[in-house]
Each structure stands twice: as C-alpha cells, then as structure tokens.
Amino acid sequence: MSMERASVERRGYFGEFGGSFVPEELQQVLNELEAQFLRYKDDPEFIEEFKYYLREYIGRENPLTFAENLTKKIGGAKIYLKREDLNHTGAHKINNAIGQILLAKRMGAKRIIAETGAGKHGVATATACAMFGMECVIYMGKLDTERQALNVFRMELLGAKVVPVAKGQGRLKDAVDEALGDLVQNYQNTFYLLGSAVGPHPYPTMVKHFQAVISEESKRQVVEKEGKLPTAVIACAGGGSNAIGAFAHYIAEKDVRLIGVEPAEAPTLTEGVPAVIHGFKCITLLDENGDPKPTYSIAAGLDYPGIGPEHSFLKVSGRAEYATATGQEALEAFQVLSKTEGIIPALESSHAVAHAIKLAKELSPEDVLVVNLSGRGDKDVEQVFHMLIK
Image (cartoon, rainbow, N blue to C red; front, side, top):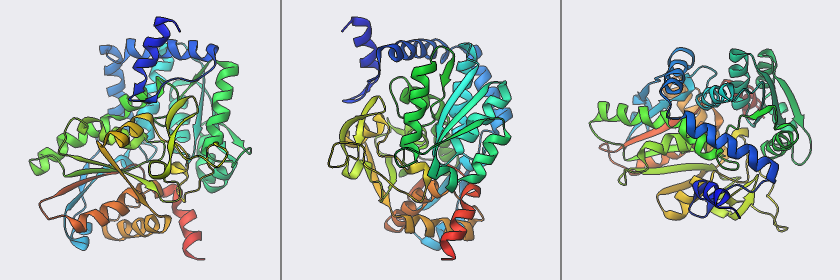
C-alpha cells in the first residue's frame, strides 16, 4: 500500500470504524473528492456562499423551541426542540445537500445522483439540483416509493428522475447499492450526493461538516436560554446524519450526554457487530450468513442495517449512548407532540421524542433536554392515518 493511500485511510477512520473499501477506480474519485472538500471547506468564499444559502434559501437559523406544554404534561426535565422541521423542504437533509452541491459545482459536475429512504434527502437533493440547474437521478427502494409516494411526486415535480429499486428488500440499503453502482459506472461525469453520515471516506466527514450547523446553533441557543449546557442531546439514528450534526459541537463537552435513538426493530448499535457495508466499516446487523440483515421500521429513514462510523466509535468508546424506541412508542410520541405543541414530527424524529419523554420523567426540573426534531411529519400523515384506522 502506498503512503498516499495509507494517509487517506487514516484520515477516514474513527477508531477501527470508517475507511474506504471500494474498487481502485472509485478510490481515485474519492481521493479527488476529499482533496476538493479539504480545499474548499475552509475557503472564505465557499463558507460565505454556504452561509448565504443557509440563511436566504434554507431559512436558518431555526429556533430552539421550549416545549412548555409537553414539559408540563410529562413532568421532570425541560424539553427543548431544535426545529430542523422548519427548514426549507422540511428536514435537516437540505443543510448537507446545499453544502455538497456547492462543492459539486466547483468540481464541474453536471449530473447528481443520490439515494433516499424516507424521501427527504431525495427532495433536498432535487431541490438543490433545481436551484443550480443540474441533472438529478434519485435511487429509492420500491417499498419506500410506495410508503412515501408524495415525496416521489415532489422529487419529480422538482425535475428529478426517481428510480425505484426492486431488488433485495426494496429499501434504503438497496437504494445505496444502486447509487454506488451508478457511481462506479459514471464517475467521470457524476457527483454522488450522499445524504447520511455513512459510506466510504470522505462522505461521513463531509456530511458531519455540513450538518454540524445544527449543534453550532443549538449550543449557543441553549446557553442563551438556560445559562448552561443541556443535560442531554437526543436525536434519532438511522444512518446517523441528523444525530452526528446534533452531537458535533457537544462531543468535547464531557458532561453533556449524547443519546442516539434507534428503532427497536433495527437496533444496529444494540445487536450489531463490526463489518464492512457500502464501502466502509461500521457496526452492522448481520444475518446467519454474514450478510446485512433485513430490517424494517415504520420510519423509512431509519430503515438501515448499519450506521455511520463515527456513531460506531462513539458507542464503543462510551462517549455516546444509544437507546431504542419501538414503532408503537414512536407512533404515540407522534400524536402526543402534535396534540400538546401543535407540531407534527416526522416518524424518524418521533423516536427521539419518545425517548425524551421517558428520560424527562427520570430527571429533575433543573435538567434540560435538547431533542433534535430532524423533520416534520407531513410526509408521514397518510401512513399514520392508515395505521391508526386499522
């Protein structure tokens, strides 16, 4: 192995997790992507343009809302909601989509591909491509296209081509497989805009960089409101992009608990083992044959057998905690937050809300919880309607 390759791999690891396990021709593309990311991430002009779109297009900074009614109803700790649901397109995904497409523009890309589960990353990518006049192809599991038909229509309305993936389970993992296959075939003119904090290096680092705006804001906001840092920061965790963004600026604050909440039906960090999936090493749910295990969650965006490499490291190092919430608990939290605060959360975010409700009861009124409300529930209302009338 050359010294250059070894250096690239060391930069892409979090403990034993991460790295880049891809064909050589794709590795060359990733090396160039890393070089351009490192070139531009601290470039004043790039930073200023990114901040411009965060402010003028996405609508940041978004509020840290005190959930006063929910806090009174539950008792115990104060619950604050970081309102990623108020972003343009309704979720945190747009933060990263804008950051990466600004990078793609500088790299001369004309064709953008992406994967999506719940559809919010697909919508965010299609939105960014419409804004910057780029061809857009979105891979989405066939089952997810049926569960999230409105988001499919949104993507198509924005000019994207949505490709349903029927192989495998027809879910997020399979969509990632197809997108990576497309990149291998078309890397010379294609930029893969990956939405989760997963994949081969440098994607996990890039996604964290662009999503870190969440915790950059919430850390300042909670100190302004409470005069202190929170007791815990809570976020749902599937691939892990909203959670790593919500955690980023608190990782060095050892007194702040970091809590990722997985679906109990896909408890990657509870029952998984270290393995390579989609070109990187992470804790992964495997079946008896050593293949990624079929998963299911009522929240399509959490339906993934692996998780970001930094989350894997935060788990084994003990810096972060990872809990589970069942689909039923998430469904109940979805309804409780809607009725107490007039805020309909995404089913993904509802897993974090469910855990916050349980934890708040165990803590005192002096404690403060920051819950990352990663997206709004518009996309899930029809699905929940059919679940509740059964």
